[in-house]
Image (cartoon, helix red, strand yellow):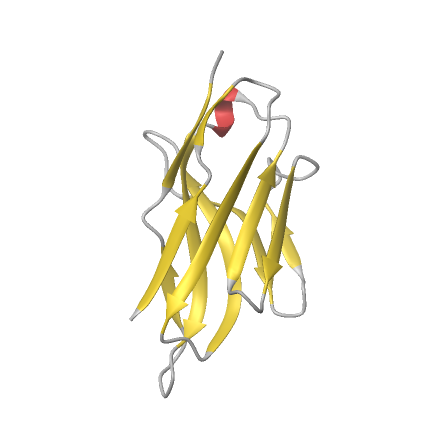
Length: 120
């Protein structure tokens, strides 16, 4: 069993900042990548940012220059620092990780999501 637990969502005014965190726990042999996706009402889930083993990062164009993803491999955590937030950033943010359990194959795992609302 692998569990991803997010924290840090909430209500923030436009131009404000939020920091999301996610911790992976359970039967983990290796973590190949961790990242954040989001889903706004009526829209498909989309990648926001991802960090791979070795530190390579990928960002959605909408996140570049405003969001920063970081990872603590020793603690199996990933964080997303979001600055200069806009109303269009409003969504449920999901933590994602590609994890190989002991003796198993790599799989996608998802957190339950944390809501981010950007509004005045």
